[in-house]
Image (cartoon, rainbow, N blue to C red; front, side, top):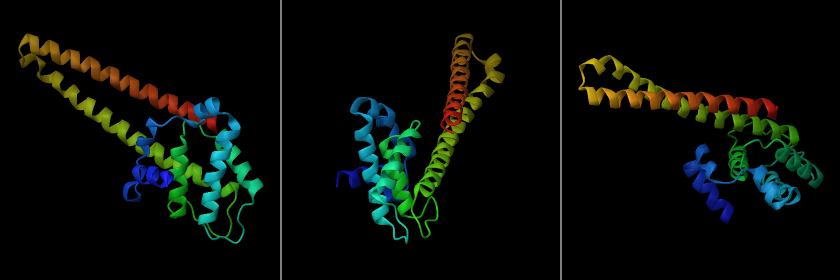
Length: 184
């Protein structure tokens, strides 16, 4: 029941709130704290739940579920368990990949790739919106000459902050890109 509650909070109306998961610990942090075996067990239960929710001719056996869980742990990157819960919920609804006659590690890998692409696209959109917002602040420079000297000083300080945030956003994008390259 708790899992259903968390899922409904992360996906109100079935729409994933990708950025809400940042308040939860990353899987690799949990693995360090709780141990790899416990995390594999948790992810295996999530995979088992997925497998029991889809009607396919060739479903996964227990060994395959454990292997898939180990793969998901190895390739978790900056994912949280809540990411996997949203991913599997979206998959059950047919939102990520077409599940035809089989459920296996390849299908789960495709789910993970599609989920990551969607999650990354949302982050990039938000990042772009922030950058555009700061760029609009740059247009104030043209009017500085017309401002009172103390106001002009304040505008220049804000522009310096905006440029700093823009640099941080680009640096963050580089880090995410490097993490994705390492993941693959």
